Image (tube, rainbow over all chains, first blue to last red; front, side):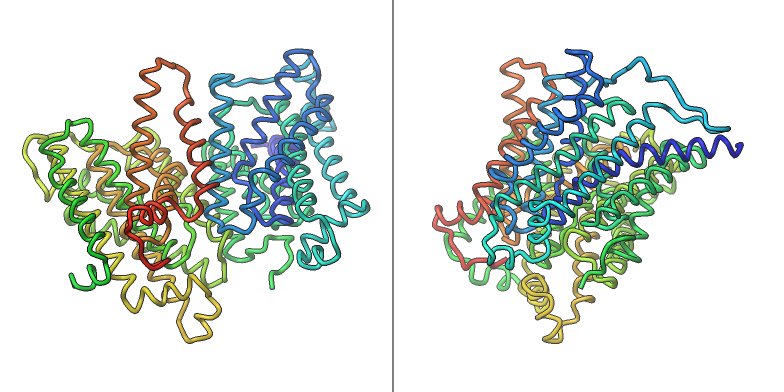
Length: 290
Length: 336
């Protein structure tokens, strides 16, 4: 195994990891603010992938340019979901939240299965097989575009939370719910916005994922688990943690694929998750819990 | 002991219990093979539901990875039987021991480091998935291609080797289900049960009153794991085939927890009632889909999920407490 080969695989994993990180970021945002774990997260990503696929098929639109439309659509889905479905569950026990979102996940998967059938759907663009050569390294063009876009989207979210009024208000809800209510913030609306933003991240990630992997309706649970692993390893509720976790998982899975065997690569992620939960349950970059 | 079980059960509930038991015992002589197999699986879910209920409903620890114990139990007894001709009547103890060992490891990791709630739930999923992948590469038990038990001797009943007719399996799982219900009720009424309730309701208060929360949580997870492993042994010898993706799959963990949650967590009849509702719903949907001639995959699951969504949204706390009230079987709230 030459050094170049390993380096290429590692970089491929890093780039893919950034896209997964953006998806996981959505999970992290939702949990960090609303304290509800979105067990239908991967299914929403598959929904976004199919949306991007359909737009491409109907109009030939590059999924990268479909991002605004798909993200907006997923934002609306998230907003309505929080408003009409999840809101009463915020104060209910975790296992009931789990069943609710599980039901949403199964509905989404089987809805897609009924409409589109079980076939894998991919998007082939005229630059799908292009690559950049940097010295001995070869980087897929689609992966590079996806990773850069995902990183920009994550930065955009970071800036939104840091500098806008609404972003600050959402952070206030996360920090001190009672305080936020006392000063008269519309918590229900902010929660709905948060869920919408979380799913908008998934929308962007879905458009980018369809460039790299093929979509099937049953991909959902796998993506959900992947998002969990990333945010737990990085630190639930930490934006930088999600990015770091995504890159770490992306690279370790890619390397495990060549060092051990492709079918065992997720074992490495689960092992990493178990170690992190055991040693540092708040995640590698998470804040220590009180 | 019988006094503890029947104590403070109102007369109407004792009658209901007797009717239910009589119905289940008499079923094989009246029901068709099809209905027998349906009720058999319902009883399996009622059984493992009780095991999970012990951990979640009574001790308050949310496990979403109980497939781990089903799978470990199933594979251990099956491998001992196939490779060493050890009858499952003995193998089941090894199964329970191994599952309890796995639960001890998870419990030690989680409870020592104060992992609770969502984090504990995710840790249990991680262990189940990790083991699923490990067994997918475990050649000694067939890896991904599956592990098969010899199918023989279906005519006469051999309880030691768990070989026999569906009727035998039916009575085995019925016995297990009744035993589990009795055990859970006895435990819940014991000193241990009150410690668990205290931990579930307020862990810090329990700790402050001198309850060794760590030890009692460990006891809850190990008993629950051992009971679940026994359910796995039953599955292995009933189906005669094991696939890692099926037996360790996350859908198995979900199946286990649906019945107690839909039925009513922490209640005595809840898991049984939930198992019947969901089992009959599933079967009803299958035959309804067949009748309408819809060929599309996923319709059944779609409706199933929709029903689940409606129940969890509009009937918090599960169906049984409401049904019990309307049947005049009311009892003190939250009593296991």
